[in-house]
Every structure is written in structure tokens, then in C-alpha cells.
Length: 244
Ligand code: ATP
Ligand code: BTN
Image (cartoon, rainbow, N blue to C red; front, side):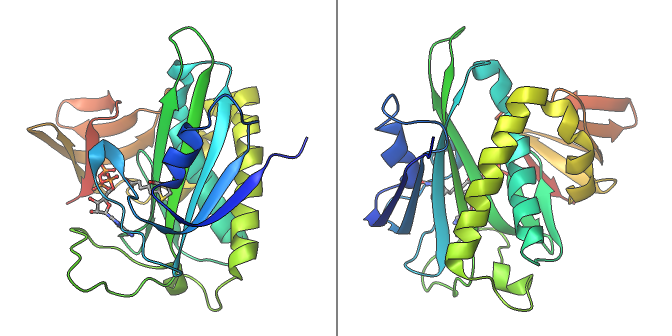
């Protein structure tokens, strides 16, 4: 069955649009917008969403395995996006744990997964992605961290429709594959793309900062951090990773 694709020029947030329609949608249903008035990131942060120059895409997915499976899923989505961009000729695209896309140590795309559902029941996920394609410097806007555009990774930019179609297809395939085989099948793919593998990083965990060397991920999707005390797995939505 074909999932629906809603293309809406101006919207508050493509994630919100699908969240408002959970229950009426088949897995794979997608919303695309040209401009978001209230694009959002993790923990209430803002996602700058100027008109015309970027891609704002959200996809609904029903995960029968429930909410517990969602942590691994955020990693798998990063792999799907990075591989889709590579398949279109982009070079140097990397993933940052748990779910950003990087290029030249700068943020190229952000992923926001929001969900509803009862514990022990199927999870209803909305997977949102904001991808900078050729965003200009925005006057008065302070993004607060290094960012970049897909135009920096490609000799010639793919057509926007091709880009959207390729991302949608790759996401749908990858999500179905994750449901079938779990995270195990993705660890090598993740490690190949990992921006910080074997590099010094710090983890910001609330007020706490832990420094070490990033050593990839384990089968649960935890980040492995090597310190003088050995290798410790870190997992959970409240952790931010930064290069040193
Ligand atoms: P984390 O590492 O915990 O994910 P983060 O700083 O990447 O932290 P998010 O909430 O994931 O935070 O993303 C929102 C942040 O992304 C904003 O605070 C801003 O720094 C940055 N940002 C906002 N709009 C854009 C954009 N169009 N391109 C790149 N970065 C952006
Ligand atoms: C992040 O890095 O914090 C994630 C940013 C996610 C932005 C995308 S743009 C499409 C979708 N709609 C939103 O409001 N947010 C996500």
C-alpha cells in the first residue's frame, strides 16, 4: 500500500502536523514543507527553517516492538539519511551519536523523533529531519554551533525532488529492516559513518561533563566512551556529545 505524502508550503512544524494525525496514518506517511514557523529540535530548542533553501521532512512509523525499541531507531535513522545522501554523490557525510548528521565537523542535518503510545503497546513515532541544502547566513539568527550545507558535500546538488524521494525511500526501507533484524544489523554501518570514532569527545550530561575517547556503539545503541577507568556505555536522551 502506498503511504501518503503531504506537501505543505508553510507550516508550524512537520512533526506537529503528523503528531496531530497519529491514528489515521499508515507507516511511511510523510509530510514535507518549504518553511516552518516553529521548527523544533530536541528539548524545546529551535530549528531554523527559512523558506526554500532546505528540506523539512517528517515521517510517521508505527513500531510494534514498542517504545523500548526507539533508542536504536534514532541511530538507524541517522544511518539511513547518511547512506541516502551518499547514494546521491555526497561525500564526507557522517553521523553523530545519537542522531545528528555531520559534514566537516559541522551540523548538516538534525533528527527529532517524537512518540506517543502506552508502555507495553505499539509506539507511534514521528521522525523529523531538517537538512540544510544551501541555507544562507541568516541575519540576526544565532545557531550557536557550527553548521553547514549539503552544497559543501556535492559537486552538483541533486534535484530537490530526487533528494526528497531518495530520503523517503531509504527511510521506509531502513525502518522496515530495523523492525525485522534490530540494531545488530546496523552497528558496522554506523561505525563506518561515525564522525567521532576514536576521537576525543566530551559528554554533557546535565551539569556533568565526562571526557574520553569515543569507541563506537554497542548492541543496545549506547555510546562507548573510553576513559582511564575503561570503556563505559552511555545511553539516554539527555546526553549531548561534543568534540574536544
Ligand atoms: P544534541 O547534541 O543534544 O542533539 P544540539 O545542540 O544538536 O544538541 P538539538 O536540540 O539536537 O541540539 O538541535 C537544535 C540545535 O540545532 C539548536 O539549538 C541550534 O544550535 C542548532 N540549529 C538550529 N537550526 C539549525 C539549522 N538550520 N542548521 C543547523 N543547526 C541548527
Ligand atoms: C535537532 O537536531 O535537534 C533536530 C532538528 C529536527 C528538525 C526537523 S525539521 C522537520 C521536523 N519538524 C520539526 O519541527 N523538527 C524536525
